[in-house]
Length: 92
Image (cartoon, rainbow, N blue to C red):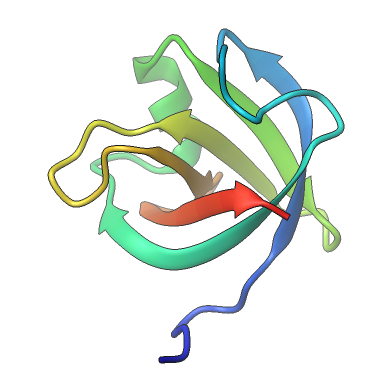
């Protein structure tokens, strides 16, 4: 099965409260399949949660990495700053 979205490698730039996860400044993560659509874009999602990280890809696009509690994905997800879509994320 192929992914409908391109796989991106993102690098963590800042961490705000995420603990006990493979998320630290300088960590490189890889995006995966689409999991769900969040009610807010990434730039506003960060205002609704206490624990998240900021990341960027090689093209300069900004992302938020956060622990989602969602029926479609109860795990760490990556969400582009200007998008509602949340994707799987794993160590690269």
